[in-house]
Image (cartoon, rainbow, N blue to C red; front, top):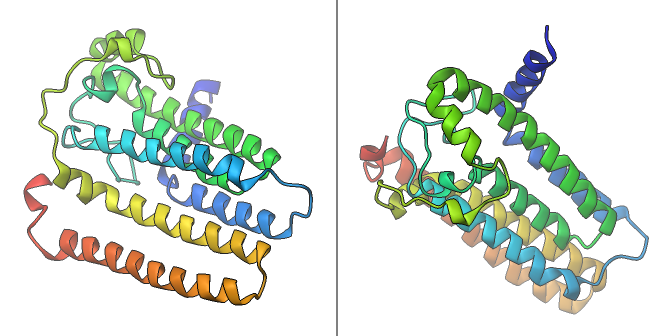
Length: 246
């Protein structure tokens, strides 16, 4: 088996588990935060940049998904799917806007944990992880679309956007499509925020009356997250609100 075939095979395997691996990393990162006793970065120093990365990542995803063409991979996990080649909108300035967004989001949440070496590790892990997936996806698109893909590939950067290449999208933007596809990611990010802030407050004010009061507020927020996620899951699977978008 050639090196290229091996890289594509690994990328396809990671594609299937692209929702599981980041969660596994998050669990490991939380565990490290709990047991790490070395001097950490100032939380006030990293909080705003970290939250900016998360929000910016979700914004990129919304702008991409809201204009996306039907019959592409989306949240499909079993195999690559593409009946059309996306080359407009966000795809005109970067070949993999959704993976770029995911990298920013996960680096953002890791940054919020305030451990310098873990931020570096997260950056390396997620860039390499998604590079494998991107390679496999590009090989699939190259075989599927031939010269059309090659022209787009030559002019469009893989991961670092070039805004000067922007071409407007012919598909109208739809918030309904965004909500249909992005509510799981928003729910996950709100849950991660809940966990991180609860963890950090507990380390600063362990078992104090302040922490107990703070925890009560986060329990209310946690209930709101659950209601949000379950409501949109119900709307997606049990109503016709999003059916015409399938």
